[in-house]
Image (cartoon, rainbow, N blue to C red):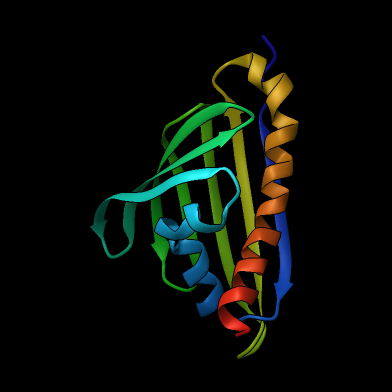
Length: 149
């Protein structure tokens, strides 16, 4: 059996500070309001100020999938996500927020995943990689809507 792990990384300089970008990306309950295909996003449990379990449901191309992750948070610095359940054999990801100055920052993200069903590795990986690529732009559009009023 061929093992197909995918590793998608991005880094982008943005005209928003780390606090603003951290808030947008950590605001999981708002995802269903602006991420295309996200039909449900909620916090299942807050373990403490730096740890939570979240659920995101995505419906694309008639396929509805649920992802539950355990997130470890360092305020205004990083968010690490680890798979609890979902369509993956393995999944983890992170967001880093690095200050450039008081108004600008660098946002870095990485998602590493392997689908539980090898069929999905072949046919769905390129779709998911494209969606991850689009995610940074989606958050930037959201930032413009909220912060450039």
